[in-house]
Image 1 (cartoon, rainbow, N blue to C red):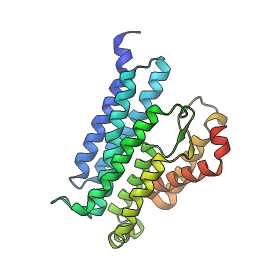
Image 2 (image 1 turned 135 degrees about the horizontal axis):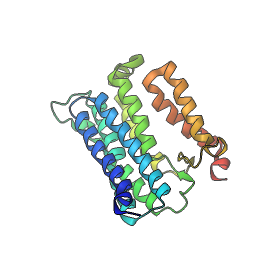
Image 3 (image 1 turned 45 degrees about the horizontal axis):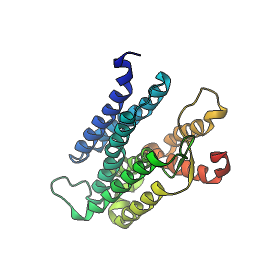
Length: 235
């Protein structure tokens, strides 16, 4: 295999990192809408780099380490920055010390990624909430609050304790021992990819009723389904 093909997965991983950095920048300039598009790009690149590596049958210690380093930013720093902006009420003119606890989630995301690299069980399923899923949940409530969808923005401004509560809850889920369905496409048949198709169905249906909040609801359903069908997750 030529060297350029060998480096394609790493190029996608670096693009993931680049998009994560851009998302942070736009968040701190009060543009969560633009940050969301960069975060979506990070999701796509993170999904495709592993898929491409498997398709090309290439793997390297460098790629594995690079993937985790990119994810620390895109799915660690980014959700922390989103929660910070919620606690700061979107104020980008100054630093709000009351919002700094949001980055505890970033620290635990980094710990989860390090733990994932050492955990040999996580091949066909995950132990605990993945950092991309956590980011998707935070993205949903952040955009909903920014648009004040269903009055969520006003609700969070009046109940900041709920955001502070989300930080330890999400951090605990990241490091939990709860088996959760893997969401990597193995083939194109229904049976082996049922959890993925189920999540996509929930997401599409939820969009019609709750719009962008569907992102957060889908993640909650993913956690609930994984807990309810624990035996199938590990089976």
